[in-house]
Amino acid sequence: MTQWTVDNIIYIMASKGYARKVIQDKGIKVFSPYYGDNFPLRLFRELCFRLPFLPKTIWYNKAVLHQNVAFVNIIDVNITEHYLRWIKKIYSDVQINFIYDNMVGRARNISPDKIPSKIRIWTYDDYDSKKYGIRLFKKWASPAINIKKQNPEIDVFFIGRDKGRGEQLLELEKKMNSLGLKTKFIITKDRKYSRTKSFYQNPISYEQVVEYDAKSRALLNITMPNQEGVTMRDIEATVIGIKLITTNKNIINKDLYHKKNVFILGKNQLSDLPSFLKEDYVNVWETIKENHTIDAMLDEITC
Image (tube, rainbow, N blue to C red):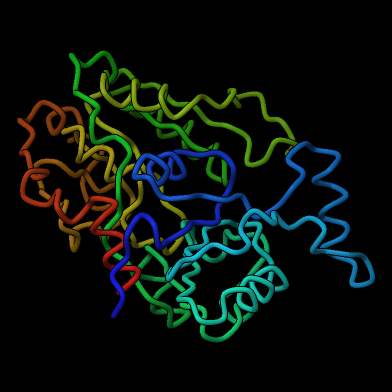
């Protein structure tokens, strides 16, 4: 079987984001799927995609054409069935992998049953893998590898979109504060044009996120219902060497789990959190880091 190299693989994914930078830093070509990134053009593009009599391929980024590759990996919540059929026709003899980097139910456009045959479908989440019968990848690559832990200024740090959990997060933060813990919670809108709530804050760059990570004792990860996979936040905490607070009970089955490092909400008592944060951290990264490089992830997905 053909082995991937930086020259025989391309990615198709959103024009922004930490994952794109990790892949590009590896030397792999990355293409945005569509033209038209500003809001008026996106609206018109969406109209074309929804109405069958309007053209679609005029929005497709033609730079992706005529690449001499063996693998095409696609990650984007806005990918459509029509686009995948277009790519499949262009790269008929190439291995194409469609990768969910969020829960399937959170993807706005395409469900697994709409993905054309012979395109391999991957998810990071155990629950979605079982529910939809799709491939599970276990080797997340983290962009936070070079981030060094600092003297902690924050006990618990959270950043994320509301996703219907904003009020729950505020209540949890209040309880943590009552235990004497210093928190920093940044809750943002789900989408740019979602209804604004009083507690929403502006998004920050990934570089700013990991700055907060590095000066925190623990990262908080409130997972989606049924979510069982390792997320980027989990990996960040492990790479940096700080503790993780999560609602994912399945985390105990993952290679990054250690009872002194991971506090499971709903299993551990919240009142025990201050003493948990004072306990020494056990460094597990050195024993598992080879499983969480971009090379390991690509080895798994292109196998």
